[in-house]
Amino acid sequence: MHVTLDGVSVRHAGATLVRDLTLHARSGEVLGLVGPNGSGKSTALRCVYRAIRPSSGTVWLGNTRLEELSPRESARTVAAVTQGNEVGLDFTVAETVAMGRFPHPARPRDAADSVESLCRTAMLRTDIADLAGRGLLSLSGGQRQRVMIARALVQQPSVLVLDEPTNHLDVRHRISLLRYLRECGLTVLVALHDLNLAALCCDRIAVFGDGSVTSTGAPAEVLTPETVRRVFGVTPDVVPHPRTGVPQLHYALDPENTEGNDS
Image (cartoon, rainbow, N blue to C red; front, side, top):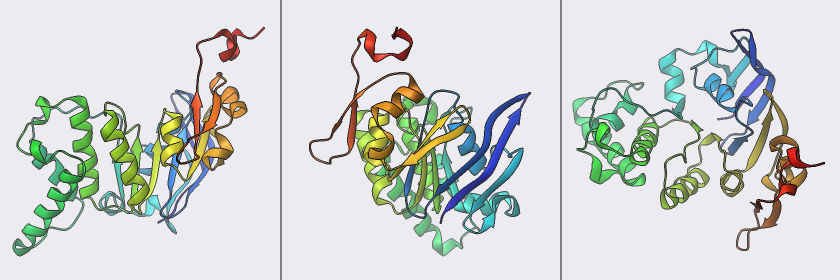
């Protein structure tokens, strides 16, 4: 299912967080959102999973306006993993993952095994099956993040929205998640700070700056020294990955690396 933000603006407390944003994620692709802090990435994603209502413009899921769907209907289509995974109640991992089924109609008693199988598969995929009986409050940040990803998978969405999903994850689980995003066939919108991870897993990348998209294209088209310097204020050396050929950015701690030190 394709996702389109058509002329979306978000204003709050006198500030414009996103300005006349137009963004299109093709069906089945991984679209990365990159940009400095405060550039509008998270705000744009919140519009897609209905945490924020745009001040103007329209969000489309396929050919349907998001506003025309009930919250339950949109939750059956869009699953989100947000930056904050704080919890107040100490549900078990298994209980939390099963919450992903809430948007769906209750299944008959004889289908309970299929729901349990779905949850078990999601927990195995995210490497948390051995934590099923643990309470969330006993988990590390990385373990908790994987629980939230599993819960999103159990929703069986067509669209997966991820806001900095690799935060707290170790290297092995980062690579495992990114590999899954490449292979899952879902439409994925993912905000990432690490430009090398974005180049590794994204079909296309939208570069944000000051509440709007400044450029969109394949990783090799947008992750150039010029673009990174203009948007982030640092100048990397960009070289192709020796195995995949995707661009990899390298930085040096020298005065010439930052725009602010140029004279």
